[in-house]
Structures are given as C-alpha cells and as structure tokens.
Image (cartoon, rainbow, N blue to C red; front, side):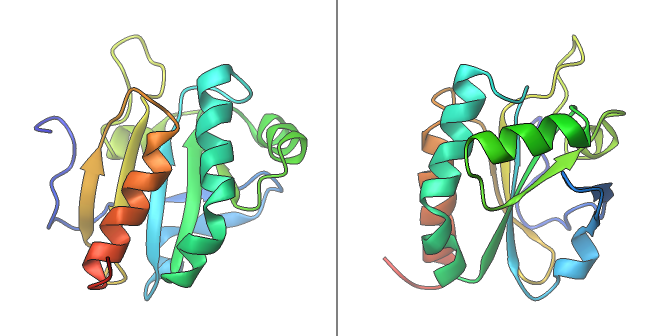
Length: 153
C-alpha cells in the first residue's frame, strides 16, 4: 500500500513504554523479528479479536523467533487492564501522543490509530506492511510472512 512504509526500508526506531511503564525500544530487539501491530482502541470488539488472535498464535511467533508488540494511543493503565482481562502475553505500547503511530503512518485523518501491521526483520528492515479489515486475519498474515522469510511453509 502506497500510504504505508515500504518493505525493504528501515523500520523507524521508537521508544515507548509498555503496560507496566517499562521502556520498549525497537533497537533493543535487533536480531529478532518484530510484529508491530497498531490498533484503534483497547477492549473494543475488533481490537479484542485482533489481540486475542495474536495471543492464540503467540507460541508460533516465538517458534520463528518473533516478538509481538501492540501499539495504540491509550495509556499504560488502559493497556494493563486490557492485557490482564484477555490474558495477553505480549507487550502493549502506550502511544498517547501518537508519535510511534505517526512514524509508521498508522494515524487516520481524524486522529484515531489505524489497524496496520508491520513485520520487521531481525536486521531492522520492514519485511511487510499491510492493513486488513478483519482484525482476526492480521496474526495469520504476519505468521505467513515470517515463515516465508525463513523459508518455511
């Protein structure tokens, strides 16, 4: 998609805090693939389906050496409640100023974070960027991309 960052380009580095206030930086994850998914709002129907799909596929992501990170504009407390309620086992990054979402072209005209997923390779390069209307498909698509990148089927 022309409006997303292009595969083959370097993923913008970022620094944010997770649901527990712990800093998370993309540069600290070098050597691992990263699935960076942006979503509009904690604990809404579509966003919950999406997060739970990533949760359910988390072991498969770990098997291919990938880290999953969710990003939206809610604060740490909102992310903590959302994570606990749905037993999510990956970090949710608070981006209230939408700096990370802006760097990744994941902000809609009205200011809401768009549902966009980036797959970043271990070298920090973007392997894929995509948007899907069915939130549940984001996880499976990211997994397919990572498996293909590793020469798996």
